[in-house]
Image 1: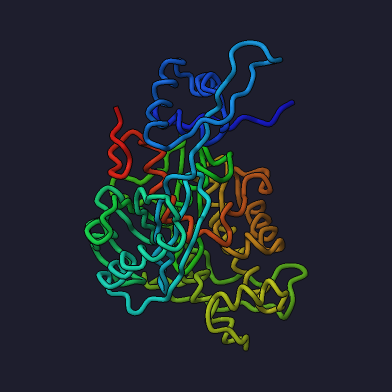
Image 2: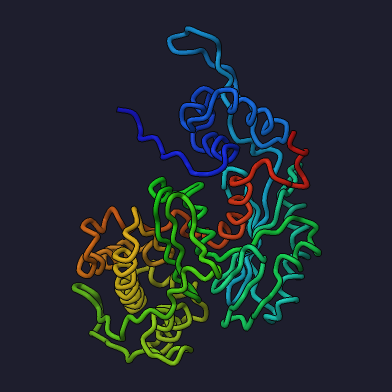
Length: 411
């Protein structure tokens, strides 16, 4: 038996054709028609427009089955003409990146904030972009600029509605960056952006239904069903930071060091023991310092855990068990095909993913196979660079014949 065919994406007819070429290219037009259910004439028409816009290219001819019939000229995504730019705005730093049309990160540049005034941060991103493009784009043009950040983001308005950790409220990200960069700007939450990235370039099983749980300096989630990432009428879907997880979570069997059960962390919402207050990067870093680890930034703690330092590993395993509690709840609430965890411990330490899955197995009423239902992100190590670009690429693949100023007008 051959490899399983990914489910056809639900989108516009043009989007369905381009996504089929992304999934299967180099691929014949006749195969695209079969995969999408569109007529051969419709596929040929859309393909001609994509060729004219430089989004796809024709590969070398191949003969039909057993050498019979007319030769096929396969189609594939053209990565030689265009890129998208992306920015992820974290609590402590920004990550600026470039990505080709197949979702490969071409370049990235992470820098700490020099103050979090929104105008300064956004104009700083726009000012850095030309240098990154000059150094890495070559002859390729940038189609659009995607921006991702945590907390409450309104994609339709291009606005960060509320980001308490940055002190941002109703910040017009699209307006500022479009004026300064001259590019179309698309804005979304990083959890929804990474859910879209999984659908485009990551785990095939995320196509129909998925939950993405993002654990970083802030904590949030995204929910996708029917191939569409849910936003909600107020663009507030995915706010899971204040779900209660309690304060226990002592080391499990085989975990090093004495059992420690820290008191519930106070939270900005006024209730102790919320998910974000217990598992966020600042909490883990502070606890690491309290236990004598020589760490200054969260990356130091990750490195120690990867080296096997017992206290660092214990902190990440406790985090995994607490995340597992919420993962079990989300699995029961949404019953998705797969739950994707964006967190370095689950992505890079086998014992953390095992602990998280054990917690799901013990607590979920719906999930009977945590090893299949709970997976690490496809983008561990590059999630922040991917997130911003995925916002822009998601818009392109949803509407490839729309108004994209750099592209020739669609006929």
